[in-house]
Each structure stands twice: as C-alpha cells, then as structure tokens.
Image (cartoon, rainbow, N blue to C red):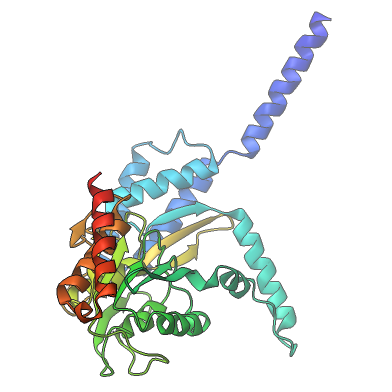
Length: 360
C-alpha cells in the first residue's frame, strides 16, 4: 500500500510539473516578446528620442535577470507593463497576454472575408452594446433651480453618438447652468470635439493639434461650425472630474478649462494625453503604444503626466454638492430671477440646505 501511494504521489508530481511547464513561458518566448516590444516602440512611439531610451532601459532590465523568475504569461505581461510605465512615465503603455483576442480576431477576419461578397450588412456587436448603454449618456436631468445635469461615462464613436448628443443638449438648452459629470469617464473618440462645439460660437476655433508618429501626420481639430441643436452659450458650466477621468475625458476638460468655458471641480485626473494603437506582438501578446501627441493651442502642451488640475479641489463625496452649490450661488448673485420672487427664494433655501450638508 505504501509503495502504491508513493507511485501515485510521483505520478501526480510529474503531472503537476508537466501542467506547469505547459503554462509556463520559456526564456525563448520572453526574449522574442521583448524584441517585438522594442520594434513596436521604435517604429510607433510618438517620441522618437524617448523610444531609444525606453528600449535601452528595457534591455538593461532584461540583462539584469529580473524576468528570469517570471514564468507565468500574465505575470510577465504585468511586469513588462509596470517597467514600461516606470521608464516612460507614459500612462498609456500596456502589455497584455490575450491569446483569446488573437483567436477572435482571426475568426472575425475569416468571417469578414466570407461575407465580403454578400450584400447583407454584418451585425455589429460593438454598436449594439453602445446602444445598450445609451452611448455613454448615463443620466440627464434638470436639478432644482433649473440647473442641467449630464452624467457621461464615455465619448462614443461620432456617427453613433451624435443624435444622442443633440438630443441631450436640446433637453438642457433652457437651463440656467450646467453640470457635466465626467467622473469615471474612460475617454473615447472625437465626438468629444462635437460635444465641445455646443459651448462655442459658429466660427470654428482650433480645439487641438495632434501629431501621429505612425502616419507622420499633423492634424488640426476645430470646433464644428454647425451643430444640430441650440448652442449652450454665456451660461455657467461646471465639469466634474476624478482620478478615473481618463484620456479624451481629460482632453475635453483640459480644453474647456483653458478656453475659459467651464469651472473644473473634483480631483486631479491621471494625466493620460497620448493617442494609442493596439499592436500584436505574437499570437498571444499585445502592446498598447502611445502613437499620438496632443497640443492645446492655449497652453502649447497637453496634460500628459500632470493631469487636469481642478479650479476647485474637493473630496470624492463632495464633488457634486460643491458644484451644485456653486451653480446656485452663481445664479443668486446674478440676480436674474430676483423679479420672480418665489423662484429666487427657492434657490436661496436650496443653497442653504446643501451648504449645511457639506459643513456637517
């Protein structure tokens, strides 16, 4: 019996070792991934001189033996990500172990090739999902005191989200002040520029300039001359941000701040300014590389590594309360509604009520 137990133990140990070996990344694989990362950075990273420094630093780390003890695929991707972030100080770098994504991409390519000759349009699951989350517009309402409130979690693809932007801005068009809540907004697409256009006049204004290293192109982005709704002009605007307001959400807030279009309230944002590309390294690994640098026409720089610094810094719990009281205070001080009597007194009562909650 003892001998049988020993044999079984040995067999289990061999099986466990074999399983671990199957799930372990080899030295050869790690070397190939690192070389492919260096090549991706060399030919795609937006800052050419900095790309060389990053690659040299990556070589030094590898030569030091830091990755020798890393045998798990995902752990290796995490280690590479952390080192790239530390070396570059660029928050958009990320290495991912995603063999599932490679397989789905290959399958999608095959399906697209099969359907290329068909007239029927393929089902777009991304558009379907965007519809289910209302293209990022989580909440739109009129707060007491005739103050508009928009909670936006993502700047979706322009063609998809445009009608929702127009409808939303139409809904708040008659308010006296607006709170735009971008807390937790993960960024997105150029629809942010169209949204910003509602706060500018008809004459197009240079909103931002971007340089794309991969295409070697510089592009100027202007506010829209036409919007399909009523512009929101000459009214107080408050934008709420936090440590999870990222990328395009930061760019929108940064632009609105420096064009003096809005008061920014909340916590300093992460500081992720660069546009990205998602590149395959091999059949299992991907890298997210910053390929685009943004330049604000007012500051002549961007928010990379610095973040958007609020005009009014608050705790996470008090951000909305502070914005709401500031909006009420602004309306009371403007004395627009003094002649309306009852409405003006309501504003005063609501203002005192919120202030007491904050102080307590």
